[in-house]
Image 1 (cartoon, rainbow, N blue to C red):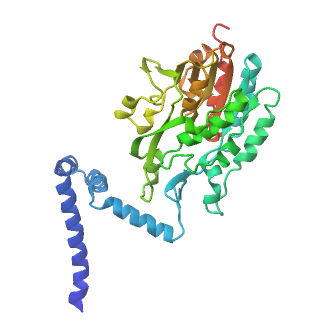
Image 2 (tube, one colour):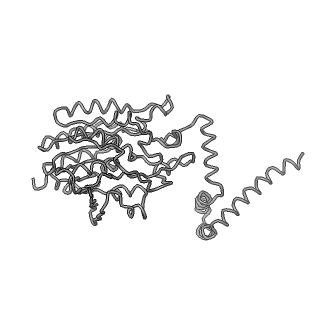
Image 3 (spheres, helix red, strand yellow):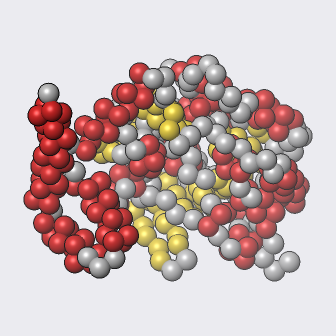
Length: 373
């Protein structure tokens, strides 16, 4: 009996030793670096060894997946404010208790609209947890996004035309409105918003069948997956939709403070080749993006928004000769002041509720057109 009791700890030690040897064999240079840098500092050595094993431990993905399945059997489907929904991730919307933030955003956007003569439009975009709430656990206390949007829109009556993004997404025929591994709208979510924007902006949306579908990037894992820390998630496919009716050739200009980049297409493959897979959409994110389209109607649109814009801007491009997108959070007051809303046919304020409720960036719209004043 005693011999059997001894075999269990010895077997455990043997397994751990085998895993350690396999980890070192997989990355001998990394193992030597850990030993060389931390041999005389036990605390540093322990931390470095832990990081090394996390990166090199055999079957680590399988172990993470097993841990996830055990958590799900126990009823847990949430980690770090992220829900596992079927094979995708849905982040919860956590709203700051500082209500002065969103009140200031509303007040300053209204002030910017009052100072301009160009027609103004407002679109507040719900996050994934609102649209997918029927797939989340019933006990989860979600922020009432629909109610907030409706109450905020009432303050803009008579000043701006509002766009019902909530129902456009909720009643969309597509089930792939948001990325599974990234906290952003997928292109089909952008198309749903494009359909909602079209009648408000004064044109007819093109049917989806008019766009050629291209599956450009496979096995894409975004920022949500990095936060999740477990398996059980299907990677995203970055899809692009190109208008096949002809007559429209678009050029995209990226402006950053010390550099500019230009692309001859809405979906430059070279942008995604060395960066994030989503960079194929308009060449990736930038503080200011200019889209020029030949053959489109001779009107211009100024868009003040956030990352959600890259889902619907490619669809809007065919309806405007010129579109300027600005992320006010990445621009200085003087840079914002250089843009006058009256230089554009229409002005669209479009923000996700996460941005509108939790950041002061939309309030910077009050600086528009102030250059020289």
